[in-house]
Length: 186
Ligand SMILES: C[S@@+](CC[C@H](N)C(=O)[O-])C[C@H]1O[C@@H](n2cnc3c(N)ncnc32)[C@H](O)[C@@H]1O
Image 1 (cartoon, rainbow, N blue to C red):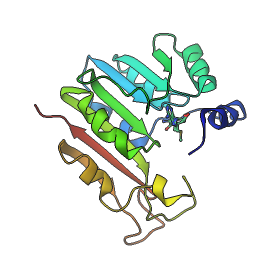
Image 2 (image 1 turned 90 degrees about the vertical axis):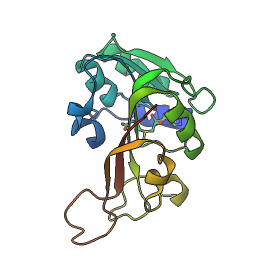
Image 3 (image 1 turned 45 degrees about the vertical axis):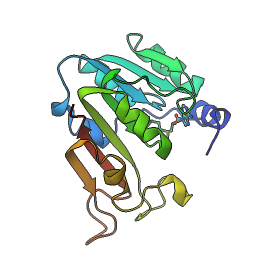
Image 4 (image 1 turned 135 degrees about the vertical axis):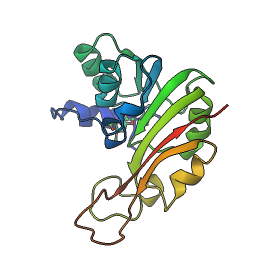
């Protein structure tokens, strides 16, 4: 896994406009009107910016301070933190919405689910092993196997699950990735 130094170098060299992930951009109608949201491993924070525009009290964490500094400059209302999220996961029952996009640490999924408040929503999108292009991480362990995200999040009420793998006409559809939206019921 790249270190924070390597991520900082990537962000320093990158001046592309960040784009929110499909799991959030296509399903903003599921967001609550108020509440506290976290964009975990946010990078430049396109998802955080969308959550903030939606009116949520938005927090964004990443260990790449270059990306966090740019996000803070863009939207000073977002509560940013430079931190290692594996060492310091979110506290239990602390967020109404958590978004994770293109970050995978399997051991963190249970703490992430625990960090949702009752009725809280998890928006998760990342790369899968059954790919049709070379987008995303090269190492298989950083990509999810078939239905793995479904299994990892089985305790949530499933609202959206989208994983096409290589089924059918692979020149069409939502490929290379999986997305899940689930609600904590308690
Ligand atoms: C592929 S980028 C995704 C960024 C953003 N979520 C997006 O979709 O544009 C992965 C991000 O995870 C962050 N990251 C990786 N490991 C981390 C850790 N242990 N603690 C905090 N951030 C981490 C990196 O700095 C990087 O910004």
